[in-house]
Length: 137
Image 1: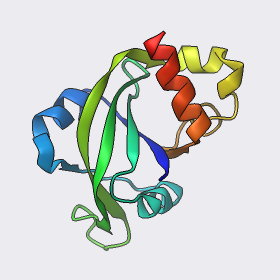
Image 2: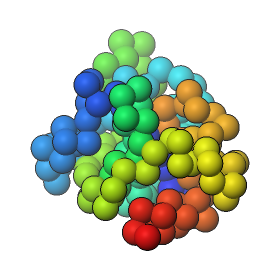
Image 3: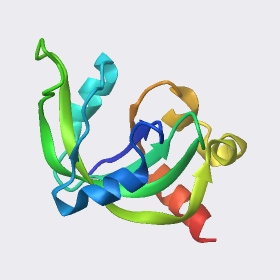
Image 4: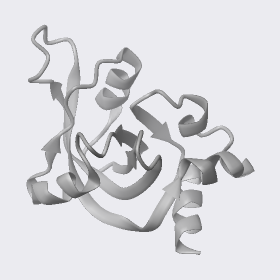
């Protein structure tokens, strides 16, 4: 199993929108970066995913799950890019902010810090556990 983080502007598609999609989930379309595309292609059924509100908020707000592995993004006319389907699993007890991540030495190598513009990112198992422990404390 691998861990991931996806970013979305909450005024475009928010955590609440993913929750509203229900158990069938929602296609994660519109990714137009080749590194992010490769990350989408590496996602496997059942992989957990942090849902991050970018721009407004700048915080991890929930945990989602991959419910369909990578396929051609129907919003890409050229058929180059991929998407996966995600469903909401649970909100975090409280949001985990970018400021918290930047201030935490244990997360200094997290892609959220080092590749901050990348919309689909890997998260190490250690980072995943650390973030969850921080919001439960």
